Image (tube, rainbow, N blue to C red; front, side):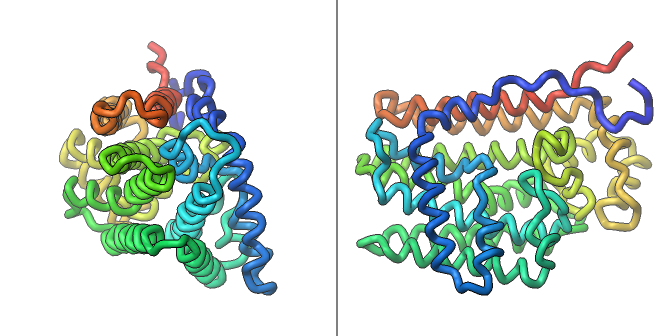
Length: 347
């Protein structure tokens, strides 16, 4: 490998294990797509085109899939209340993505231009707000206030996590505990509430609902760490979004924590300067440093630890229909991590 190479050549991509699990809920996801498309008419005519652009079907849709998988009873077609709940969490998630892309100045999301690049940052902020509002509108249509309460609380927590992360951009006194707290709020919370709502609306007993919610939280933490790893090791055409935005925007994520712990003082000072925005980011350099210091393995082990905690939460419930499907998601994420792993450097 030449010194100028930005990243080692990745091994062939395996068959995406997530897709294998999601195939189980393909009719459910089709029903979700139809329901979301029907929601476009609820937006004011002036912003329907913008809403339609944001409510696309090209993403992995992990959160709504968690609603369906945690509420799995093998019944087809999907229950209308599960479809509505899945739409609620997906709209909240889409709103956060619109806002994230503005703050990260990202150009690409889901292999196409971000809403901020198409419509401008100011308009994108407002369409994100409209998506949030419509999610709560849908949640309020359930016969009890339980769903609306759960979703509104989760939305507040997600926004709190994003706010804290934004305020700490460029700061180098962020502790690992701060990072853990941020990803628990901004990502794991929606995973958690998706599993909680799915299992609750499907009529599962309280103990399993709690276990599914705990599973979702740990899966969400693992997924965010994976996403942070992919920001360095991914390939844009494969991941489908702008890469390298964490370092460029001054976010300290687990790969950077691990690298900072390993670097000699002079190199560490240079990296800190980049995080603070005092120096241009040197992504290719840091990828080589990460390779030398085994950062990929360190971060992959942290992901695996969270997935193990997720599995432990479901261990008392092996015979509930959702359990094997949810556990397959853990294996799917491990496969995603392996697909990022760089090949050994040529001797």
